[in-house]
Image (tube, rainbow, N blue to C red; front, side, top):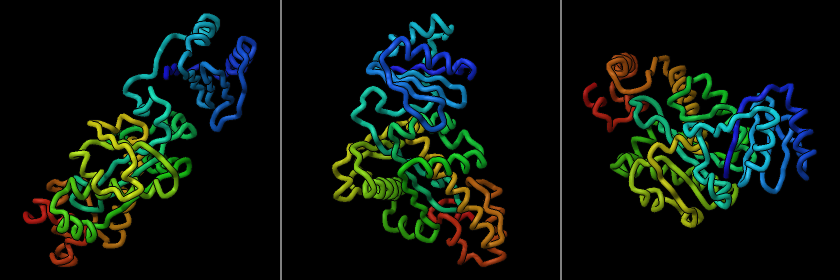
Length: 299
């Protein structure tokens, strides 16, 4: 699929729509967050409320060449760094699931794994919202984006409390196996709600780890793991949903214990752990942290 995207003054949207309809036999559809969507056998044109004008399809040049000449549009493809669906060249892969996790490198707090189903209804919406790898976003942005993700997608979030995390780690004795178990669970949860043939996750270990953890329904899915998969819009959405949940769980935990629980694993974290121990005793530290971390023994 070829895609053109450019900001165009809203004052031109009506003129562009009329020009397309006069030049092609096409259908106008209403579309959420857009002035209109026009469908033709070779392309789909959408003018969003944000003033973003998008043309996508197998043969967008039949429209773009005419529009470019009349309205002065430049041939600017979507930036490769913008999250794109991994199946952008094969329509039969849609819809598909993206999965990601948050909290695995944080001494305090849960491990959160999230899965999001991307389809033609929410893909462009999430791109327009600016959803991308959560590591590049502020907490406030992620929480707002997470609300939209939950509203406009089939999703699953698995939040593993520290007590449960430590129990599972003792069972698996390997972080990648624990992560695979979590990713498999959110994939299975989504498959309980809808059928899907493909799933994509960031690469954290051998693909067989997730495949082996999938149950009967998930065994039929085609799974792909990719380095820096957060560049994909489905994995980016899962990343945002997982991190937003982690941030909210950390805040709840802080309110419950009346302590500050910093993110990461550094000297500030050790200081906070010391304060927690003075308040509750060292035997309760496992309630709020991951005990297999080297930091636990150091504290």
